[in-house]
Image: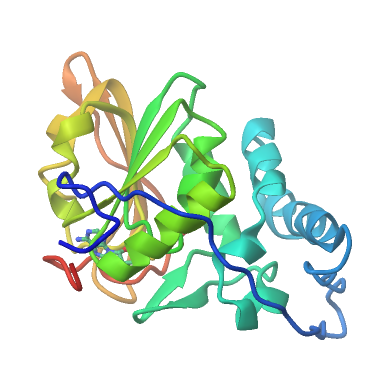
Amino acid sequence: MRPGLTRSGRIRASAPALGVAGLTMAGADEPAIPDPTAASGGDRARRRMVEHDVASRGVTDPRVLAAMAAVPRHRFVDPAQMPEAYADRPLPIGGGQTISQPLVVALMLEALELAPGDRLLEVGTGSGYAAAVASLLVARVDTIERIAPLAVQAAQRLAGLGFDRVAVHVGDGSEGWAPAAPYDAVLVSAAAPLLLPALGPQLAVGGRLVAPVGPPGEQRLVRVRRGPEGFAPVEDLGGVRFVPLLPGVEGA
Ligand code: SAH
């Protein structure tokens, strides 16, 4: 157990430090991405990202689009990566892990059909970015990360930026997070070969689970609903590429 972690694995956070970024070059046919560290650059970069990379590729839920426009993605990456923060691709966040692509975060949150009173579980906190966006759409987010230093950093970031409806836990998310179950929505942010059996029972009746499932190169994004009569047949939402879900905990 390290300082900053409570016994339940929940992390107490302090304010994060921020660094400085450089400039970015856009490709010839791409609208330029404003420097997010310049005055109002973050707002302009996010507006461009939402219009160019998210809304134009099929995400229509206005609550999801507003949440994507509100979360400063550049504050969830290393200072050296800040100029790239609004490009529509995953970025390294340390520990061999990545912050998810904005379009994929938006598609998953839209597929979860979130309501303001919902409780959401995320497996795979990473940088905390998806949890931050989700927290603007629901009442409470519990997010679980197996790499302790990533969880500590995400918790510090989230608290420093005022995302106070997110609780970060260190643990193996393939077991879900029983203390706060049941959940109205479960977002799995790392790919397992099969749907995780522990998560189904932690889903409330009426709940939705969205997860990447399948071997590397053949992952599908799937949705499962839990109705009064049990689990509905799995829906295939399309091909995706996620880092693998791994067992156990590191660095705790
Ligand atoms: N949603 C994140 C990106 C997640 S990348 C973001 O917005 O930044 C996937 C994350 O899942 C990685 O940080 C990885 O360490 C974590 N992970 C992999 N297996 C896990 C497990 N069994 N339990 C919890 N987290 C896991």
